[in-house]
Image 1 (spheres, rainbow, N blue to C red):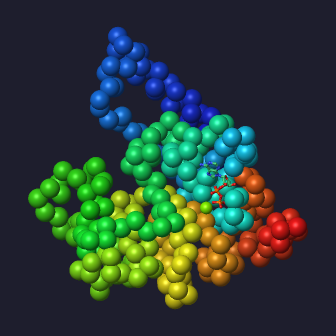
Image 2 (image 1 turned 90 degrees about the vertical axis):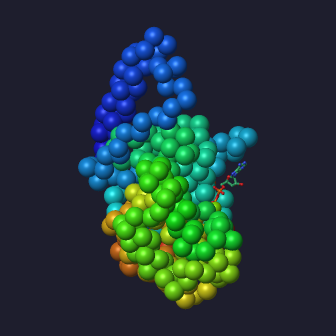
Image 3 (image 1 turned 180 degrees about the vertical axis):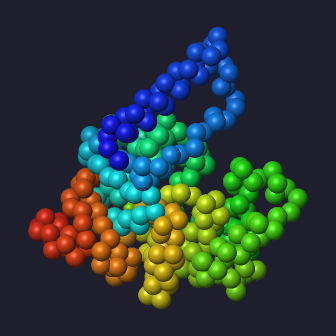
Length: 293
Ligand code: ADP
Ligand code: MG
């Protein structure tokens, strides 16, 4: 996507907001109070899922992100690597609305300006995020956790009050298979291994069918076998979802990129290098950063 297309998207959104605001005597303030903003459908026709431009985030004068720009395509699996403190988590915070950047733009598809949406709206519109620590409902079964995730989706909550439809049951079954927990459906989530809890949380995200998945250090604390299975899972999601995976484990990144996919190296809040894993690993600047000068 070119910046002029993004500009056009932003212009249309402004125009739309203006028209709405002029439609009532109070300029839209009273009319919109207390009801949910109707979100426009994201537009992925131009092939871009996520577009960050010139993002800067300062914490007491320290720039955690410094003019960061990044584009992730529809269906792409992008790995982001970089030393501790590079700004990887802060970048995810900006995408999900947890942190508001001082400057810059964040677009989902070509028309949705994420900086104008709240955290719940961003989740609702199709951006799913997995945090470093698993956050599942320990006292509920695996199945119930997935059911609950389905209910968190506003579109289906009403119909869930009584019982699950056949399609919803099918979807839970599909996700159980994807996350390797089919045999554990009735097990209490608290009894799962650390790796299995991570998968369950990914499964809960998948229940809401996010277009974009943000995964922050998803294999931290996993066994080698769990790590390999997680890579298989992500590879199976590629294409249907766009994935942004932040990870330190190079073997895992190698498995995900399969020798050809683009990797982004973040350092001091901006992109230090981008390209095939082997190429960025041979890059002098990258080597210097990882060896710590
Ligand atoms: P990474 O995930 O790449 O390890 P982070 O995005 O967590 O890096 O942090 C980037 C930098 O910003 C670090 O130096 C961190 O200490 C700082 N930082 C992150 N969040 C805050 C915050 N809420 N207040 C102050 N400094 C922060
Ligand atoms: Mg981090």
